Structures are given as structure tokens and as C-alpha cells.
Image 1 (cartoon, rainbow, N blue to C red):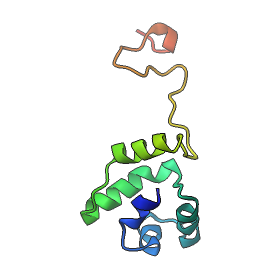
Image 2 (cartoon, rainbow, N blue to C red):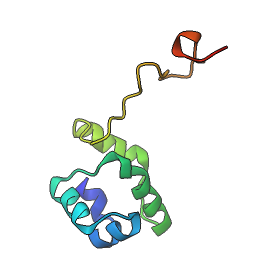
Image 3 (spheres, rainbow, N blue to C red):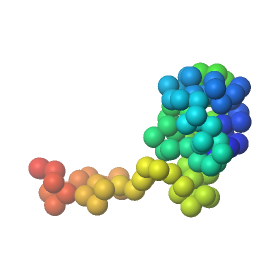
Image 4 (tube, rainbow, N blue to C red):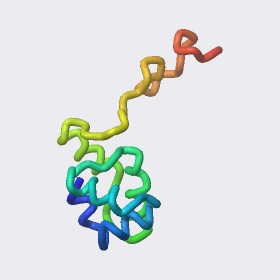
Length: 94
């Protein structure tokens, strides 16, 4: 994730623009790990600034790192993970 953060002008810039403390972003950089809840904010900031970054790219990095996020991306057990319609057993009245 360091490579992602290095695309921006500075760590202070990232912190200010996504509304977190500079110390937090510095720790992310040192650990090479950004909490997953900030993925969309980083992508939106990059898009606004004309910096190439897509959620799919972050997902690939997380997968290569063994899912190193602080937020689980797994769907809850009662949530369909494909394009099927939800069923009565999944808690959806039909």
C-alpha cells in the first residue's frame, strides 16, 4: 500500500484531504497497510486529482498481501455472493 500512498503529493496531503490525522497516515505508510474503510476515499481523491487508482487495483494489492486489511471484505453468511435472487431462507420475504 506504500506505492498507493506515494502517488499523492504527500502524506500530509492525504491526511488533510480524507479527514484523518497525519500521524495515522504516517503509521499506514510505515506498516504498508491502510484500513480498508479508506479505500473509497483514496480512490475518490485520486480521481479528483487525476491520479490513476482504481478499487480493483487496491483489491489486488490486498489479495497479494493476504487480505491485509482491518475491515473484513467477506460477505455475511446470509448475503448472496453471486447474481442469484435472494431466497426466503436468506431472510427476504417473497
